[in-house]
Image (cartoon, rainbow, N blue to C red; front, side, top):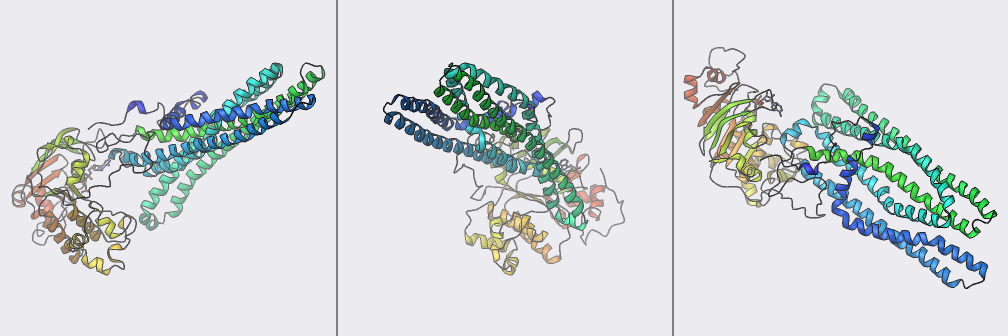
Length: 634
Ligand SMILES: Nc1ncnc2c1ncn2[C@@H]1O[C@H](COP(=O)(O)OP(=O)(O)OP(=O)(O)O)[C@@H](O)[C@H]1O
């Protein structure tokens, strides 16, 4: 299955790796285009909001004219009731419309951010394995958290108000032209000069914000790195070094943030100044024009009111443009997630960030609720070659066949590609050449969800998820009954542990299950598979020496699991290897030999070396061999 991202959905120039070279490019529209794309699903509500804004702005713009009418009637001794009622209706109606419009627009902003967050979360969990290899998890976390938070504050703060402000601005200018175009020209000249002055500052706000957000991403990545290996950090007495390294990114982000607010301040003050200058200009020029009879005093008052009207939209629009620069920095980082390759979602394409997501019930499947069952499948590798990096092959022309229901052992020196073979079966990675078959079906033809539900994978470290023992056991088969669960607890030899724990199955086992021993985590993973009964079990045997009680418990649990499925074990214990139906011996050239323990002992020197205890741990019956070379390499 190929890359499912869609080129037309990816805004140009949003890749993080491409630094903008010039001020013009920094002011480019890519981030803004992505923002518009994110807003597209909410265009209906946005249009209603804008429509209400137009009405509200119309009501507000009519107010100075109504005020002029009141003033003129005072001079002419006419009835004041109608113009005053009209003025009051305009004020109240305008306020009500603005309130509703604000609510609708801001709710759309919130929805847009929620939609982005939901799709980001779904997409981040669906990326191809190589993307996680390439990107730091912390930086991805920062995009889902800090970047969407920045976008939210920007969108809901000013940007949407700016829409009605533009209408207000255009309307005010039109009415000012109607009242006195000479004064309008002088006002526009002032605004233009100030506007040109602040343009460069606007473009620099975007790059400063981008750096601030990148710094934040690196800080999160640094923290994730240190906390993820906190035992190593503490054991190496490196807390200070790590905290200094992380603080450096916090300071980078701070410095860029300060640069951005400095520019913010310059732009904000300039827009206020522009309005004040215009006001003074109108007062001076307008006073003279009233004195020489070119315009009436009522016209001047109305004109001055429009200047006051200009003040707020101008401030809002300038603030919004400033904020849009920040938003486009955040948007670019969010949109870059679309550049990453994702696995296809069940029955549809991977979520594309920016597409609408229902507010509730996103339709996400919680995983299989029934055991996958089914007869065991055979596994065949046909001339499979693969490397994580282009120039470094890991698997070279690997071919082997494991019959349905067999227990197979993968054996070979460290780093030879045993875990990679299991990863290919899970389709975490696809072969560059050759193919992998489950039964007689090419893995590439089996939908990912269907494939993975048939497979149970127990990693060497068997990391568990934070939560209770019960939640972890039920992770793949949530619909299990209490009786089934209890039976599996015993079958996976977890009964004694559960009875010992303060809250039994409901005991919290800590982040990644750190409150359990390695052997207990492996038994927990086996228990989970006993509940889901996969057709194929992949097991990375623990390398750590288990005490004999744990060792026996683990072996019994594995035997329980092995009944009724095909099992492939990365074997580190000779006892496991010797009991296997098929042994696949890998070395750095690929598959060196396949056969039974007896065949390989008779025919293969590397295998004999491994068996003698060089790379397989303890087996009393076979370790009594002569000394062998320390390095075994294909
Ligand atoms: N995600 C990855 N990105 C790049 N290289 C990798 C990745 N995972 C493994 N490798 C490299 O691929 C090679 C095979 O790794 P693999 O984990 O499959 O070996 P292994 O036989 O399981 O080793 P061990 O017995 O020590 O666990 C190694 O050289 C390793 O450094």
